[in-house]
Length: 305
Image (cartoon, rainbow, N blue to C red; front, side, top):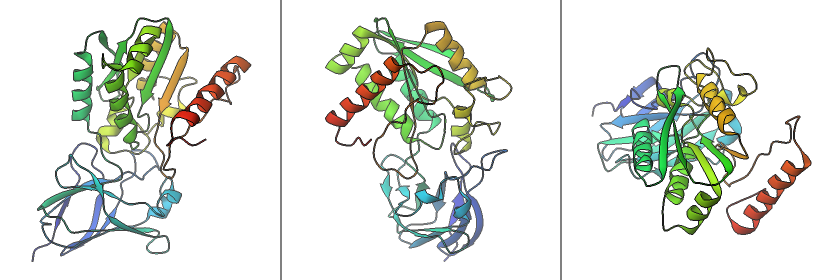
C-alpha cells in the first residue's frame, strides 16, 4: 500500500515532514519566521481512509510551552467543520519530546491541528456578516506588514469606550472563536445583554490583530517575527504596523475598558490576567478590575481565578 501524503501549504498550515513509511510519519513543527517560537501545527493527511495513522511530532521539548503537552489531545477533522480530539500520547524523553497522534479516519483526507483553526476566510465571513447588521459600522484601522486589513467593527451609542481585540498571538485560534460568539451576542437585537451593552457603550471590536501570523501558521509573531503583545509601549510601523494602527485608533476614541483576548496552552479554564504592572494604575481602576473578576467568578462556572 502506498505511503500517506502530508501537506501544510494552506492558510495557517504548519508542519515539516521528516519521514513517511506507509501510514506512519515523523514530523516537526516549523518555527515562526525570524523567531524561536513554535507550537502551532496544522496539516492535511491524504490516502488515509481506514488506515491506522501514527504521526509522531518530535523535538517538542523546545517549544514555547512544553508544559502544555502532557494530557493534551490533538484536534482532528474530516470535513474542516467539526473538530474532535484524536488519541494522543506525550513522551518527553523520546526524540527531544514526542507527541504521538493515532487516528483511523473514515475519509481519505483528514486534517490535524493544535487547536480548531480559525481561517482567514472565516474571518472575512465573520466581518462581512457583522458589518451587515443594523447599527454596526466597519472601518479598516490600517494594514499588516503583508498588506492585510486590520478590521474593526463598531457599534453602540453609549459614552463608555470599550475595546475588544483578539489574536495578537495567531496560534491562539480559540480567541477568534470567542470573538465570533461575542459578536453574535452583541449584534443580536433579541439578546438582552447585547442590547444593554450597545445602549451604554461604544464598542470597538478587532477580531484578529495579526492576520499575517494567522495565515502563515505562526504561534506568537507577525510576518516580521515580532511578538505584537510586547510592542504596545512604543510601537513602530517597521516592526508592528498592526499595533500602531490599533493604538492610533484607541488614542482617537479614548479607552474606558479594554479586553485583550488570548488562549492558553496549558490551562483548560477561563481566567483573567490583570494589568497590575502598569505604572499609572489607579486604585479605582484596580477596584473595577477586581469587581469584574468577582462577578465572573459568581456567574460563570467555567471561570477560574
